[in-house]
Length: 310
View: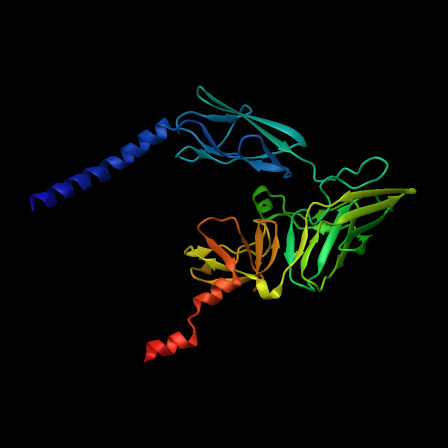
């Protein structure tokens, strides 16, 4: 009984001193920035500065006092100009100097004609099933003839009308969720391959003003063998799946632990599953990837089943 009373008294003390301990912790909290990271680069025109500091005293950013919660947390939004943006945060005798670089989303076309930097697509290795459309793209000089060659096949890339791109999911947080109308020329062409195998890296070609410019692509193309597809098994309690190969795409219903699904495509480190969802392959502890033959070995043979029934 005395032990029980002792435990109750200790618990009571713990409950009573917790708020005080919390207050002390808040009072000692140094000025801290959780986001953005150091030397952050973005194409957004606004950014949140998320952080915290001890509740006592003011926090200023570039001399401007900002609002904070009772616990001292803050998350104001600031516009970004193109190029380097400097933010100086101060709280009492503490200072954080933060630099954020806003990069332009408008590709730069070389003078005299050519391809814009980093505009050739695919820009990372891709894998698809036979007879799946593969689209190649480039941003280049207007009024040019553009084509791509891969596996002894030449595909013309035609200029597209001014395209409209939907903003990324995070744009709702910065109040910049209007569609973006591109003013540059995009070229695109699609084709299919019915034989599986590694096709290599595409070669892009541009003809303009009696001049020919060739450039090798960055992303290799692989056509999967339908009889040798890999299997993904969810090893975590829930596997995160998305509607496309990027965190910019929406999440789908999590995959339950033990789910096994065939991989029918790949784009960089993202895998496409046979029901259309995408998962990130480089997620340790979430997924196990192995050849289809291994899954078949998991299934007991009819002979073994009959033997157990005897």
